[in-house]
Picture 1 (cartoon, one colour):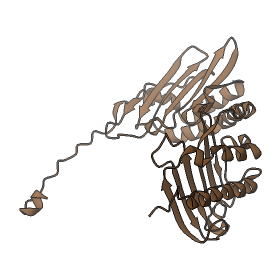
Picture 2: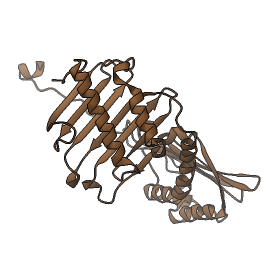
Picture 3: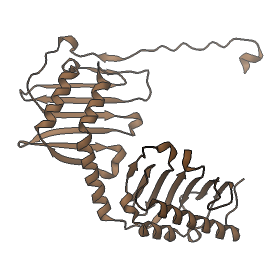
Picture 4: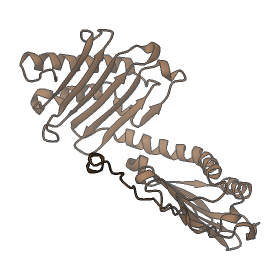
Length: 322
């Protein structure tokens, strides 16, 4: 403002970009290792650490085991399964296809990038030699093609381990008491124009713990229009037990970590739900391909919600948010 008032031109400091720093490794001087891969470790360091994961294959007394861990599935912890030489052969094919021998010693980072991602990889061969490389916002030739192929190669093993963990959690069932819920239904395309966004939590957790946004185009549960309730409601008036009874009635633990998309997803209602319990277990599910009992649960949930809104409004415990 000072410069503008007095007609002066503000001089912006020049930014000096350094570009990737570090070593390119052996490159064309590398020699392809012809022996088999016996151990493999790959670590992906995602954006702000939110989607980190690792693949670690080791030989224990002649038995190969794959360990997988992912921050997106932190509730599953470390997952492990036995694998055979076919997987190691597939990894050797990737090693040759993407000329990974040339990556030996690659270690670079880019100081100009504040976020982004990176990787660390180590491969051990049957002849006792090994290859290691790493990068942070700087990558060797063919890296992204390799990463896509690697993830696709690992996918059936990872999906198998995730489903095993999911089923184990489902078998445990729910034991805690519900203390927050986040539920969204959003119609799109030919499915309609209604949307419901519900966030209700324990009255000690947040000042305005009752936050409900409604867009009713159909007039199915409430007169057509847009509404928002944003206020504090006591736990005894919320009645978490009523919502918990619905979870039990429809056996929603079966939806644990459900995530599926319909073929024609642009014309299907999208849903997301998250139910939190005081034993720290969280039941999450979302998608456009609806799980079993979806329509029945949706109807009962929204009917219960609007009955509560009507009762709380009549008692002046909630009001429309302007």
